[in-house]
Length: 308
Image 1 (cartoon, helix red, strand yellow):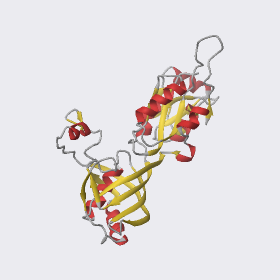
Image 2 (spheres, helix red, strand yellow; image 1 turned 120 degrees about the vertical axis):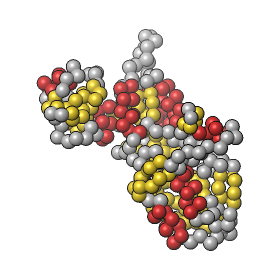
Image 3 (cartoon, one colour; image 1 turned 60 degrees about the vertical axis):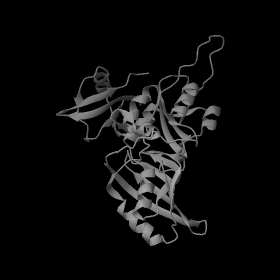
Image 4 (tube, one colour; image 1 turned 120 degrees about the horizontal axis):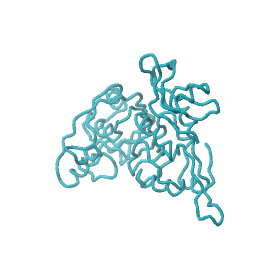
């Protein structure tokens, strides 16, 4: 990660110009994603800050924040696969499908075996149709579902296709004399997957109810938790992944000639990429010049990044 001096120039009253890049934040529990963006605006000394995919206040872990030009990468990161460590509690259902909501039903889960859990988890792995939690931010007739639920309205959210690449059980613990079962899992999934909906559906399949009691995101695409920094660490030393490095990790790479870089700076087409995938194109001095997509016999700039 790069680092940035966030001090002000002496006697000038002007802030130092912030760079562009991604901040891999280890979001604390109790913070909204918007809270983290507000904190990053102060630390980066810029208003041009956004995040790539909301994490619920209860959840912790990887939240990708873009600053300045890197905000243009966020739309591509939102769609990346994600990995979570989670704890599912079997035997209790809640209105929110997680620990923040009221318990709506309690059933004794003592009869649930590890074999039962493995069998139903296998059915929730691969390409599935998932009904998001009713308190999600999905819009129903122009209004967020959670707002409708909190006003006492029942909402009917249609199922949507998601992919669960991996759903591994690490531990099964029996609590309260075996009446409650806690299941520690790792889930790797496509964008748009609700882990609390997986907890709910597992509980329903086992006929005991279930909800999420812990959630930690450990990866978003190529950006992993070991590279993340807490808000306290960032306040002491504000670090970010420079724009070019962030793009190199996210896309196919192409090294440009001087002539190609000049053509792209004017938004012109250049010879095709070697791959059909969206490709990050870099100038001879290593700067990110553009994101390119093949179109016909040429590569077309989807986004052009101005030189520093």
